[in-house]
Image (cartoon, rainbow, N blue to C red):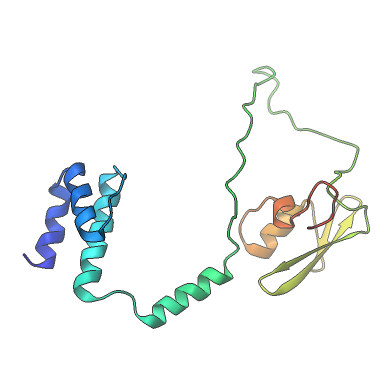
Length: 165
């Protein structure tokens, strides 16, 4: 049977047949039961075996990209279940006149090494200064730096005392 025919028959197999085929191709069993994932994974492996895997240059580039990524080292913490105060009250926004204990006093500087650059954020009375601009939150600073949304305290690795570890 040629490669195209073999790949074309995969969607017609049952999940148990796909798991058996997976074990034959990869040499190990799987607990996966998602038919679409199994079809794609088996098809990829069949093609890689028939036509060759990634080139050494592609592997090196992938390793470079992976080393440059700011990866999450632990899963997100579960959020506690929220109980609405009343249906008509709308969202409750916490307000506090006391500063967050994780932050240095206004005028203090938060440092972070990110992708080979030393970042410096100055804590203001109401906001944060970075790169000549003032931001309302640390999360806004982190988004300006990375282009993605991050929790500012997690991005700058602030612990309970306000000092980055």
